[in-house]
Length: 153
Image 1 (tube, rainbow, N blue to C red):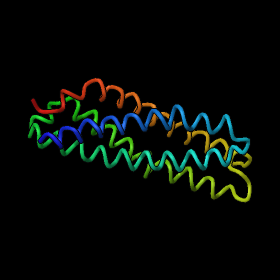
Image 2: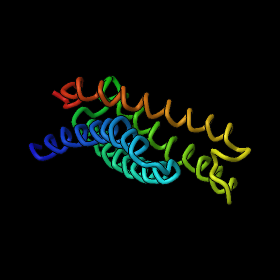
Image 3: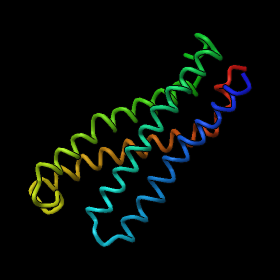
């Protein structure tokens, strides 16, 4: 159980850390340093995709860890519900919102989406994506602060 507990802590650190590092450090730096905003957006999108897969892997492990550690008492654990909500938001963003954004970009070709008639729709969906990401990030911070409550002691 020692390894499983260490992996539990590592998953929380990696998931929350990747959300914060990519969303609030790397992506803003890309947009401030690259003159080509479309290129910055494409690179940021690839990083957000990797972050989503990290979240899906970590979230799945955390749910299983808490269930095995606490049994049915997991349903009474705030940490369990934080992880479940983070995982649901990750899945919704990656498999729900991101394909819409990708389709809007494709539909705008040969123009960039922000130079097309689809600009307003793209902004709206990008706002939805950003809102989901902000909530995930805040939940990730809460998860770091409350992680000991999910260990099953």
